[in-house]
Image (cartoon, rainbow, N blue to C red; front, side, top):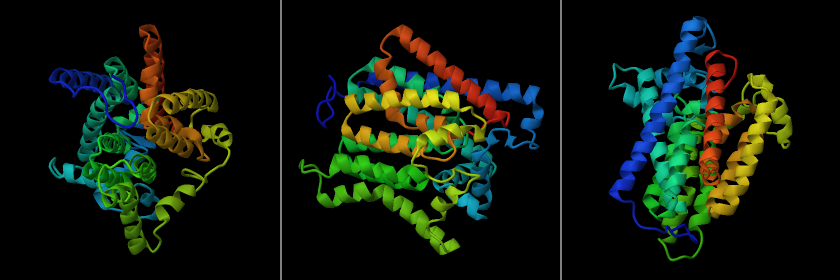
Length: 370
């Protein structure tokens, strides 16, 4: 039975469904890592300079992964590092302490375990919201192999942030306020866009439906803001300016200034090694999926999706748009809902996998900033 209103309809998940979900998520997780691993090995054999520490991309610690490893090992040593929020390096450092005090192992384990949790939770959320088990299985594969999904296998924050975002939506929709608040707070510590989860929380909780006390509701809505506030206050105390994590992003060699005209960002996406034409195609697909989200999923999903897509497309350099859009999971749910034909799904999955593989090759060969 599909969702109606704001409640969660349908019978509870059976033991069989849980096994099926876990099996689908695990299979997709293994397949995506096999793809990334095969590409990395191929680059290592054919172009060893790209993985031996002499090029911008060093092994699996490429691009942002190098920053997170540095922060996990040495802390925040300069202003540029402050744009990377602390949750992933903190967890990676703690996990790495169990494995010969290796930040690299800790970060990779954290990201990949979080990715498996993310895929499994996303399948369960899709099934609860739509009542469509087939769509849930499609969503798992599309999420694991979407353009930009390579970030789920690397020591990036996408997997951890994605698991927390899905967890918050699950908790919000089931009115488990303490769990929603915990996911929101940690999301605020995970990445700069974590604060945007306050919007769906407000839509779900700030209305008189007789669920929970108003104090608990307001605290849950504010939890992403509170998580970010803790980090910003620490930055202010340690570096004299609490806004550095956001202002440093506006440097022209980083994210760049916020632009009111997304087209300008797309045309400049070549700055990061990705031609603007495939980026524009991807954005067109995302725009169509936004419409599906707004029409077929509850309002909270649509509001968060619009905010996340806007954040992705208003950067002065659009080269990371595939990663940002892949992390906006309602778009993946929408894709799973519209690919009902086996043929259509096969074509969509093949196109997504080819795009993911291409971006992975470009990222490992230092030709593209993922």
